Image (cartoon, rainbow, N blue to C red):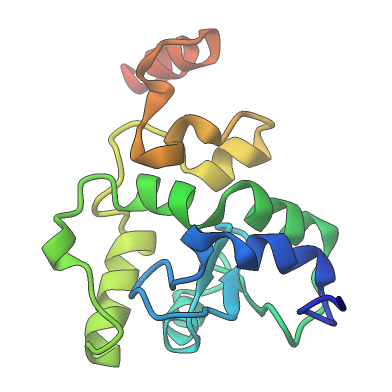
Length: 164
């Protein structure tokens, strides 16, 4: 059977993962765009809001049109929608999350709060893409559980910096 994605066949398992079959921001089915630095998949409408955040926050690429760098494939493969949302929506009331049927303006406002202002993130915790860049484990957020509360040597050092 030929790969589903002729441009980036290495993304087939990522796209096939049930958690990645809906947009990370609005729940639209079959997202075909990604924030390659944040490691999550989004629909075409939400991808526009991500582009408007600027590349210093979100770098948007098409899953099917753009040829991906190996680093982007690794980031989205390791993080995905479940881990990203476990962090960025940590303190979000589910009723506040937009749906595909909501206006573009409502979704754009939500996306700005979620990624630019980090409104619902856990306090004093690194984002999954930051952990990955540091060579640390991103699975602390897998399954909606933040297992990073158990202190590790690196975390204790970070806590001392926060007390200054």
